[in-house]
Image 1 (cartoon, rainbow, N blue to C red):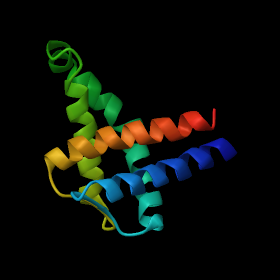
Image 2: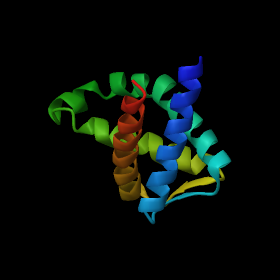
Image 3: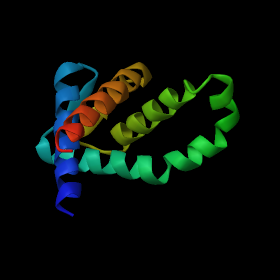
Image 4: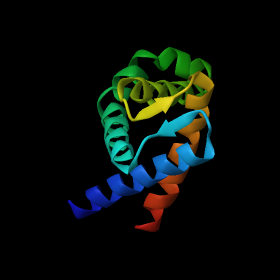
Length: 112
C-alpha cells in the first residue's frame, strides 16, 4: 500500500516535470498533478486495454507504433477532462505522454 502511494506521488512529480519542460502542457498545482496522475493511471488501467484490443489490427500493421497514439490520446483525454491539467493539442500530447512515461519510469525504477 505504501509503495502504491509512493508511485502515485512520483507520477505526480513526473507530471509536474513534464509541465515545466513543455509549454503545451500545464498543471495548476501539485494537487492538480496528483489528481491528473490518478486519472491517467485509471485511464491506462481501465480504458487502454480495451482500446489496445479494438485497435489490434492497426497496431500490428504499424509494428506497435500505434500504441504511441493511444498513449497520447489518453494523455490528451485526461487533459481535456480535468480543470487543473491542460494539454494544448495532439502533438503536445504525444510529446507529453512520451516524456511522462520516461520520467515516471525512471523515478519508479529508483525505488525498486
